[in-house]
Length: 375
Image (cartoon, rainbow, N blue to C red; front, side):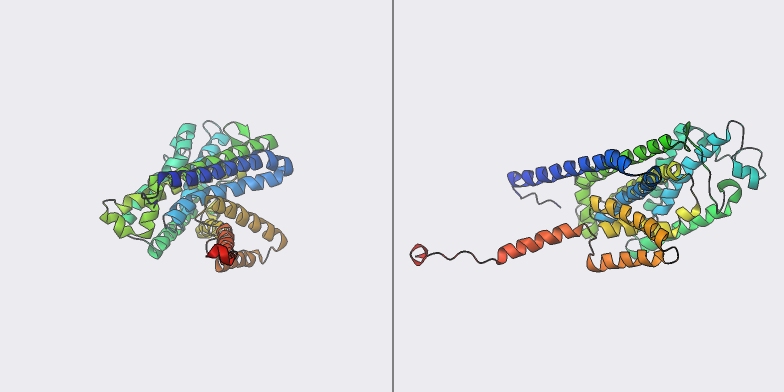
């Protein structure tokens, strides 16, 4: 936490310098996403980048919950899936047209009308709200149960991963209403826009890029607020925070719920970018990949987590194209090497270079003074 005894005139320049660097980085990211990438990439590669940016949105929430709060969230696939399925359900209803059932229900199901729990998603306002609020509601219920019983560490990670597995199994078992293993596929429209049109696909990319920048700004505001300092304090010494009169469960719950909302929004935007959502995209393996991206880039750094998530997702695509049978081994090796030599992720390289420069500067001998001046 910030030392209140530090003189204000000493703290303010540090804050201003950090804020200026953040604004410069934010502006550079905006230029890269909105100007350089559309000019340099083909429609196909730009569509892949849109998918990578969705994983980066999940990494922003992981940076907040794990990097700052110490909550190893191995179950982000649940919230990503809730947001994705909420969006896909509305888009499938819209594609089917008034009075018609989605195509997979006509193929696999025997119902003559939409299931009752599908019907609210016909409303676009409800569907949009559900993509974020439904994951946050589930996270609030689960988090209240978990954190108030002081479940933490490896037990929390295992429990969150078990939840992801249970959710994926449930989706697979509901073939008539969720598409089962195939999921919700062949999504053609996005709120009246034809997704087969490259112009509309670019529009989806710009929406995703804008959403990512907004989430980064929101996460940064939380991290550098009094709440962010309290979250770090809970991570480092939970009992001391409790002694000071704060409830650590509530502090951790906020980070968990916000990270869930970010994952839900990422899942919702992933659907129009890819045109499909299925249990294979939200199970245990994707949840671990979300964490790997944040860890490789640097879970304690927003920029590191975002760039790490994009880099790992790109490496997955590139390696699978070059080495279809062995790309998973290369991905695992990338993760092991990064954490073995850089436990803080690639973002820690900057700090390491600065510390080495400072150490070298302190080791340089001071120039000797003449005998007369020394006297």
